[in-house]
Image (cartoon, rainbow, N blue to C red; front, top):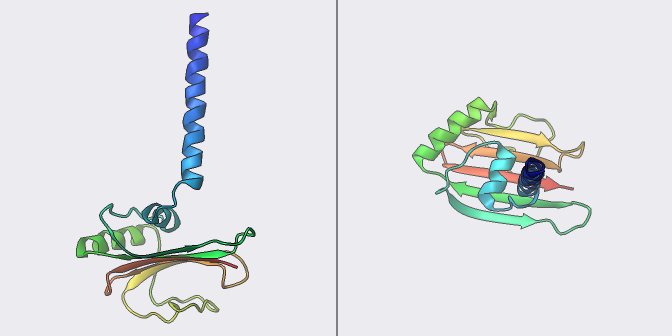
Length: 143
């Protein structure tokens, strides 16, 4: 009887841990660093300098946008460059036809990952590592 109670308590603990992990991954990562890591697949240094965070999700239908910009040190750039190569990021400039937000003409040294969310080119996720300007940009737009 005592073993059965212990097994029930352990089972409840496991269920609570799984629920807490799902909630954390789904809802509570709305800090700029957490959100950027989730969208980019990169591990960002905790002391990274946030330049701008604009999060506008006003409609109930899911339309909105997010813009995050980080300033990087030389070490951050080298670390993120290696991670971009490992995660198969493409080299700048952006090559996708039809994609035309303000960064599409960006030339320079860096890497990007573009994910179109629908046939509408305005719905997208893009991560850009600008090696020369030492910036990391994450932009998400859903229309």
